[in-house]
Length: 463
Image (tube, rainbow, N blue to C red; front, side, top):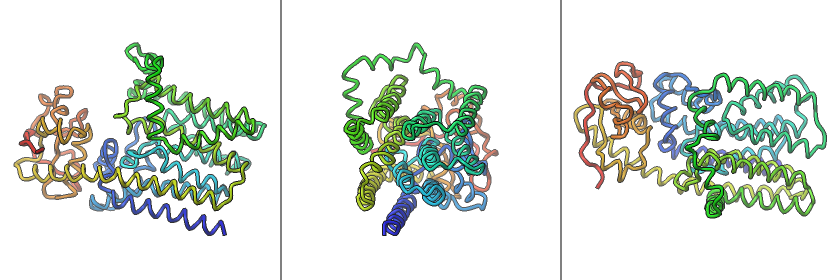
């Protein structure tokens, strides 16, 4: 009976997320999302940066659509459905190959907990990598590391997770330590290849460290980084507590419940390990960054590794020891998921308003001569103050989808001021983004064309 209910309700969840993805398809390529999607359409190839090859999986459906010459509106839908398919495939792997229904529930929860704005940029490498931590732990828990085939799959998942994002080694190490504490033994035949994989990953990253990642690493020792000073101020911790209670309500409740459980059961090592990794990760993030509320979309990515650190002890220890009924687990899961989808929809209406506003600006610009436009400076500080570095890419995509005969791109004054772009641009060039100048003729003719000419400043649009 539980098997039937489990199948029915989990299938309903993925169906609901697929409907959400289709309804909000035009809202789900903000910021980095527009950057990667435009690259896929422009080059008709995958865009991989910083050796994070998990990006192949985040771009797969959009890439397939482009290979078949699908119209952009269909590519938008495929791009939006991609994350749903990813979590569904990992869910099926956990339930049917690993035979672990708790891991399946954890996969579902990793797709909805700790993410709100990320739902509208569902291509971030760390978002795709987090459920892999659950699979690594599920492999260990179910002893699926015995045969050669199992070991290949296990190490493949581990390597993919390690290269997905520099912060993912933290929850991965937690998974290995927590499993050793739970089983009270070490599997040396498994640990030796795992140690070699970690060593190989570390050496590879050191040799291939990009300028972007080197800049992030330098925050740990940069003299100009004043973030550590805030760690000495009690008021900062009050703000941090408010942030987590506001944006990470469910994970904090699950962690609190787990801590109380460990205390009552005197499971000291599980308690110490969970708190140490949870608090340690927060410390690392705040040692290098100031936790300002307006940067919530960015911090969603930075704090995502906390989700498996919370879910592993809660689902695999607390739920097991307390022997919760299957009905209780499913009802609780449904309530959490329904609430999160409701929050996604609520925030999605704000993003829909942004999309409509951008579309109206595009229609306004399409009535002017030329195809390269600069937004009015005052507009960029008022009703379009949210427009970021990817806005030229977003407007090129949206204008092409709206009217293939009138493709345009819109930049901000900041884009043109960056690195002296205004003086550098020739009539036959445009800003792919503010750090990248491209020739008009180099655009993919299957989708894009821009007319030669200078950037034209638009009349004020905001009222």
